[in-house]
Image (tube, rainbow, N blue to C red; front, side):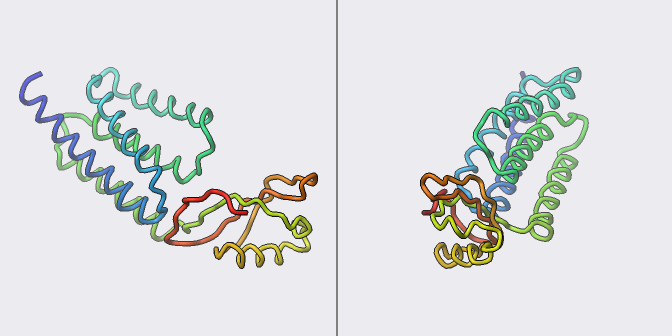
Length: 201
């Protein structure tokens, strides 16, 4: 490990931090407003970058990349349910770390920057143009009669009035006839929102 190694590591690490900051803090948080996931994106990206960079070799690079994705794919099914949008950003943070740590040393930093720039632009365009910012919440609902299909319009109107959210559809997750309540998952469009509460009553 000589001076060139440390310089090489420092430059790549700084580029990686800048890219993951732009993607998570300036793009993801701007559209989703879920602060609790930012820590996961940052830490996961940094850890994957460090592990891959320190253990990289021409023989392990490709296998390493697939191995990291396989590990976190398995973990996806061992943890609590995470929205698909957040899981997408988890894999983005892993991919960014892999690219910045394992990209061939024969490529210039300008090429690395170009790759990262294309990823950032692609994510931003998809978020801005193609993806509707649909959010969801689970609600415990007591007006059990309104869960009938013929009353769904009345149910949505009641939910809009009581929650103040622009709800446009819902799913019935569970019905408890013993307590006359239903668990609903409501979907709404709201550009700027917070998810401080997961449940409404």
